Structures are given as structure tokens and as C-alpha cells.
Length: 161
Ligand SMILES: [Zn+2]
Image (cartoon, rainbow, N blue to C red; front, top):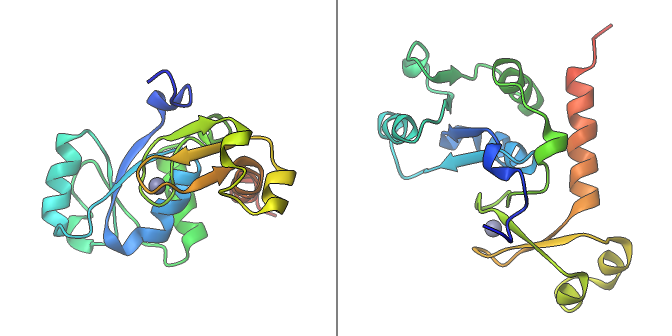
């Protein structure tokens, strides 16, 4: 674990059903560990989630009264994100840029020189911090994602007029 980004072991964990794909990606950008298993039924996913101590985020009304389940009734992704943060608050500033948004794998920081051939020159020129996902081999860079995430969160948590 020495190479993994530090602090990530305390990031929040969730499981999300297949209806919440976009929400899952955003939670991962914030550093949350989000299990998605689209091949499982809602009840099967709930079983796996419970076994792993993960609250289940679901759009399935039939599960809405189960413990450890957050029924997401909002249709819009920003409202969905707000629902999650109200029930399970965490600080994305602490955990952002630790996890692959596509496959939930922890990112591994790499020296900038290691990605010179893997990213477009303008990206290389504009960013200092790079990390790779060892599962999908995608190269991630910090600033754009993290700033977007943080401004998104600030917008969500700002007091409304
Ligand atoms: Zn990946």
C-alpha cells in the first residue's frame, strides 16, 4: 500500500445500483469507494453491500425501508449527490483524486516523466500531478477533475437564498 495515495483507507464506502452510474462516478471522483455490480439484482447487490459494510444507494423503491439503504428519489444527479452528502457527509478535499472514476481502483501516483507519452502535450504541460489506474491503465491528472468536484460540492452545500 506504500504507493497508494495516503489517507484513502478512510474514504467512505458505498454500493450503488445500475441506475446510479453517474452518481457513482462522481462519488469516486470525490474519493469514495463505490461498488457497482450491474450484473446483480437489487436484492443480490444489497447482500453483497451488507457483507462489505457498505450503505446501498438505490433507485429501487422496494428497498427504501431497508436499513443501510439510502433510497435516492431525486432524478437529477446534483440532487442525488446532495442526498448522499446530507446522509453521509465527507470531505472531498481530503479524498479527491485517489480513485479511478471508471473502475473504482485506487490510483497510483507516478512521476510526471512516466506519462509523457501517454497524455496529450497540452495536458502534460499544464499539470504537475499524475496518477494511473492499474486496472484500466487510464492516466489521471489532478487539477481539472478536483477543481470541478470541489466547486460542485461548494455549490451543493452553499446556503440557498
Ligand atoms: Zn480504472
